[in-house]
Image (cartoon, rainbow, N blue to C red):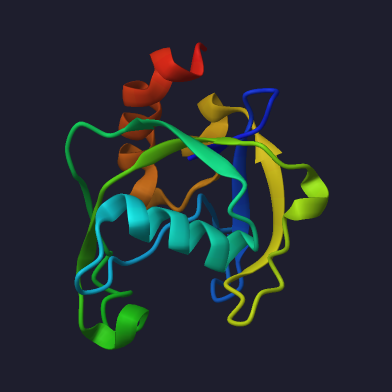
Length: 143
């Protein structure tokens, strides 16, 4: 969860979804990689910037399952969902430092949103996860 100075959260629209699918940056942990290391790598790969410092780490892991109709489509049918470790990060750059047109782009556009609207703009199968992440980081964001 990347916060700007106005306490808004970075979200981006996925290129590969037919619906209006916004999400925060996320990604897999490579073999031998620690969760924080993966979070910083994924942030850079997906947003083109690493200008962020860590404010908090989720106490535990979060999970979501894909809807049955998406299982054969997403990740080539190899996975049925994800287990995620979340980090709250303070963005230290300017909007000009963000570049979603990376080597392997995942997003078509991006914006800053208030944390409380995240569950309303995410795909339904991730909604509860986003509610829980915002709830855990609420005091650190100072909502």
